[in-house]
Length: 136
Image 1 (cartoon, rainbow, N blue to C red):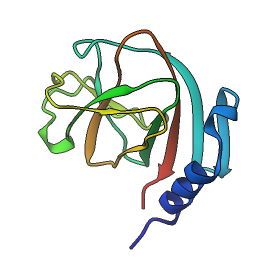
Image 2 (image 1 turned 90 degrees about the vertical axis):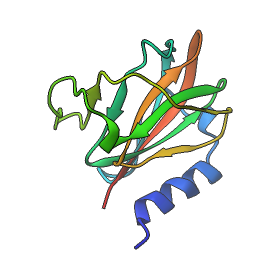
Image 3 (image 1 turned 45 degrees about the vertical axis):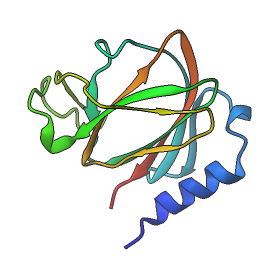
Image 4 (image 1 turned 90 degrees about the horizontal axis):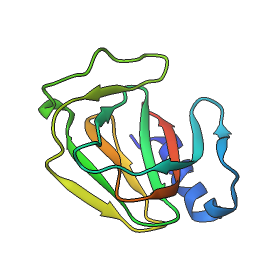
């Protein structure tokens, strides 16, 4: 079954000038789909932390420059840093980042609930879009 919120997110990415959106949260479909436009400090691979989500799929789109992400299967993470923060839908891990991918500005990268990801690997600041898509 195809996730209708994921389809809607991809249409929104295709049809919207994400660079024209102001920083903050933009609700697209209530709690089912929204996007956070942020400016963040980038990190070294050693500083970046793997994270997972239960309720939402992440679609991350770097806007101002390329961004590198650490990735690993959630099942491969062995060192949780505390418990799942249910309110924020995030659990961090202390496992090292071993595998990375890089997205260029405007490229969308999807992280489903079964994939741990460590965003913001790079230098300086980045302007980016983080879509939160309700997982079914």
